[in-house]
Length: 138
Length: 296
Image (tube, rainbow over all chains, first blue to last red):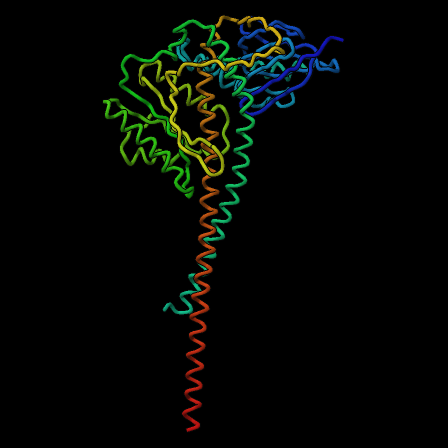
């Protein structure tokens, strides 16, 4: 069995997880990356998306992050996110409502203003949340 | 000498006041616990964040971000004043407002325009009464339950204001929670961001050699993404500290009030007993006097 590394997901409001895992896959801004034990020190920003990891029992797990930063060291990975949710904690109705709202705003807005960018970001977050809930329940 | 009835009604009114102050003390105690838990939950994030930020700030080039660059001429300053929404917490708000006034007077004497961003009703009311310009106000935040989004919304507004030239400097005034007895006001500069000093890593013989971090996309870009978040973190931290301090201050104030009520009740009871005894003695003297007179 592969050596384990420690995965920590932290948000300003709470510690989401802290456990030993085999592998972590995370959505970096310039591409998804995977971390195994013994990784070289690596720092990147994250875009909204999913973190996949395999826990010490070999079970696949999935977490939503709204973007943030990740620091990988040989023996641990720390994810700093503004918000992060396990699949069962995702509020799907709220995500759908947010998606709806963002799309309406995008339909009216002009491409160059800040609100447009914000609506786009909120749309991505909503889509990612919905994707996590729906892909697993298939 | 107060009549018996007067003293009695005074006692019962003080007792009722005591019930209220005692209840407020207990409410503040339980809220304080909640606020402290939130502060503790935030600490790991803040610590990790500043560690990573220090790491990058070291590698990024000078002038990597406009948020770091001080303005040559400072004409407009925004002060973020954090106070509570409600009173009955001793000198808590007074101390914060005093600190704000001092900073404002200092800036005004240098010919700088000062505007305010208010968290909390007490500070806002003070600004209104003194006819000071308010750029935005957030009520029902301090002392209650709030999420990180409050900090990021208000922080973004300040950053936008700084970048478009509405303010040249931004300060924040918050209550630093040092413990149950001390919550002194603190003034911090928020923008431009003061120089970030990377935390000194402890290096001893056991520390294994670590290769330098690979940074994606690039140190400058990553720094530009982290700096606004750093502002949000400062604001969130300020809100947490001010909330905790508010509850601690209210607990103390209400504890004192309850003690004062106890003293008053004791004194009044003494006065009541004295008055009652005096009345009884008077009556006895009357009766004895009457009896003596009948004996003749």
